[in-house]
Length: 161
Image (cartoon, rainbow, N blue to C red; front, side, top):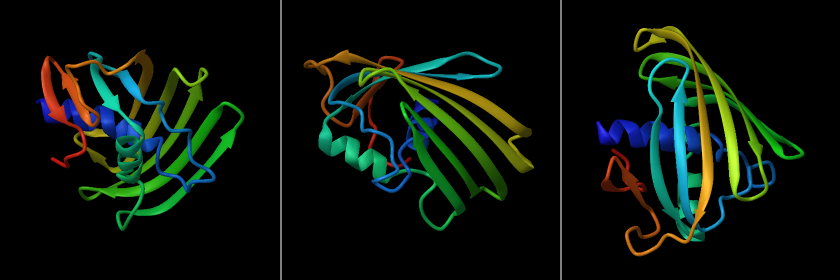
């Protein structure tokens, strides 16, 4: 269950981080981030994630729209907004996604991700997720860079499940 929450939160976050360096979003500033993923139906899930420059670069490199599973990827910036469109194969379903991230300085962002699946994925033909991120300050002693706290449990966010 914790892995599923982490995948959802980091997956949404990673959608932001998949463009080429000159068209990519700004990296999150080092420190503790609280991220909340809210599906169109269902309960919100939150986690706290500690990042430094090195772990942020690693997380950006893990972006799901890179590699052999994706046949299309386009991204661009529009001022304080980052827009991304992709078409990827996910477990036998083609996912067409559109995400819009709006930045509030370097301490907060809001992303809306709309995805359509053909054939339906996990019983859904379309989903909309909203992810918010807020910088809380220094990581403190309880989390090291690359670690996340989900439901009170510490997880290495850089490990693939």
